[in-house]
Image (spheres, rainbow, N blue to C red):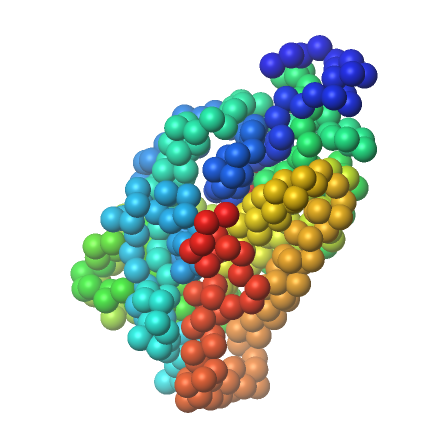
Length: 419
Ligand SMILES: Cc1cc2nc3c(=O)[nH]c(=O)nc-3n(C[C@H](O)[C@H](O)[C@H](O)COP(=O)(O)OP(=O)(O)OC[C@H]3O[C@@H](n4cnc5c(N)ncnc54)[C@H](O)[C@@H]3O)c2cc1C
């Protein structure tokens, strides 16, 4: 890489890379692989050391991935590497409840037998997914710049000049911000954000339990926030347990035994005794939605565009749909001989993803407000709502297809087709 300032000729005539991706998280690496497979030269920049990102120590984090996300990972040859460690979700049970009282009798139950595609989704542990993506990046011709971040960007009519923290300058046709919910690529592009903090924190851990989970995921709605129990391979589950922030901080400070004693009455005994099976994490929760997903020679993907409440486990799934949509827009554009950084090309991506993600943000925010409280009236309404939704097969099937990511205008990769 040439660290010298680019000359006028360099600025207008040559590019170091077609697409520079800021952020090598789950979305950034997947996008890099998709674009590279379509023939683009891609440079992937991340401030974290590679060894930290590729570590596969067991830390308890798991993602509920939709069928659509699985197809994207299959198309990029990632799925065969992680398939054996992915736990299918065959049933989802949603219940309203209070700690110590057990779930309310009204229940919404989804069974994979109601759709043709097989399991509704899969739970994949971070320790399997992240190293698989990074190994695929290593095996590709993607240029990787680790221990390095994007600190500046200057767009012009032909491309964008990107300044790196090591003093280097790179010239690209397009800069993609996959740099998370505090995206500086977005702020430098003049893209503002809307959102708020929820006064809720997610306590995340993995547990070992006595009885088999039978591939069933559970969502218990408690007054402080939802408790999600996602099945992992073996007799294990990944827990996303939401509490008010002050209470969560106090619980996080407890030792392992005391922590489990607080969890047990919320969890119930339907899986027998439980014990911790990995580290514990805390994530403060908020909503952060970029007001536009594109800027001058810039596109935003994943949490950089939309970070939502994990109540529906859809954040990464939405990011992978961004990845598949942007890769398709750019691939189609280059086939037509178009400039991939031009505003009219990027606006196709914005059009495609804006409505879907705004709906997701509104839905997760609304569900969280409706379910995370102890108001008797709202409690009665939501219990009736859960019961009614359960009694209507067409509605239930629609919700299953939604959760599996099989609705809306799906990109080719999410339909299982090549780019
Ligand atoms: C408790 C919890 C549970 C969740 N469960 C689920 C689930 O079950 N299913 C699901 O689909 N989603 C889930 N999510 C959401 C999911 O974790 C996120 O949507 C996803 O990890 C976001 O990935 P990302 O790559 O967009 O961003 P990030 O993971 O934030 O990655 C951003 C990357 O950008 C890098 N970076 C930052 N600044 C710069 C810069 N200036 N230059 C270059 N690089 C930079 C960072 O080092 C980082 O590697 C959950 C989230 C939470 C909090």
